[in-house]
Image (cartoon, rainbow, N blue to C red; front, side, top):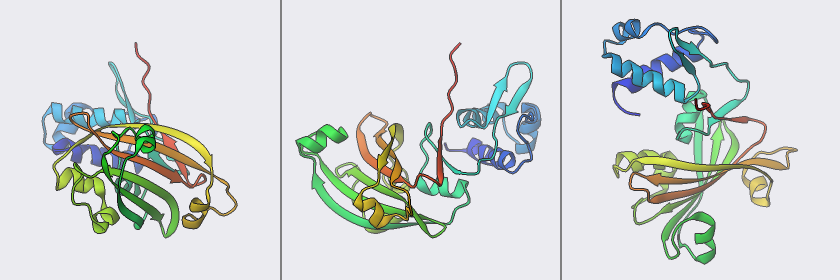
Length: 239
């Protein structure tokens, strides 16, 4: 999202999460929101559409926009949207830190190409990152980025935000992310880097990311501590 409607979306999202508009309440009318934010009706509608897409609200014909959000005990990661680790941490009010444990180039052989979707022979940058939330190591991200498109990556960029670098410095837009969620047994590597305690399994999100022309630029296996996270999506049944 970009532009004025993004600010409106964030303001309304914070109001909803903060209980200003509680579960099952109706948001103010579009007219009232236009006056509040000093903007056109189309701008408000874009912000409301973003809230609908994230499952915060539902538009009800003839009545208005009703709040569906209920606070969760567990921290949540959206499956349906494209949200970075930094954005998710901020939304959940975590203190986040990233530690890079692997940073090296490689070339996709036949086996890796079949697994990831990258063409055989593609130059890649392999980055493994441990994600710490409030000081606890809870996520192991194993990323592969296409090196001829996501160029000049550094450890410093990886520790900050690769997506911010892609969209800011490289001026590329991540348009589509395909994801698969599984539950898998913890590996020796998981136990080395994550604070799993007595757990012997993880929630694993495998994803492919594509830019505007349909080219795949990323393949990621994101391994999550099973207790601390809920993965959420919103589905709308077709009429």
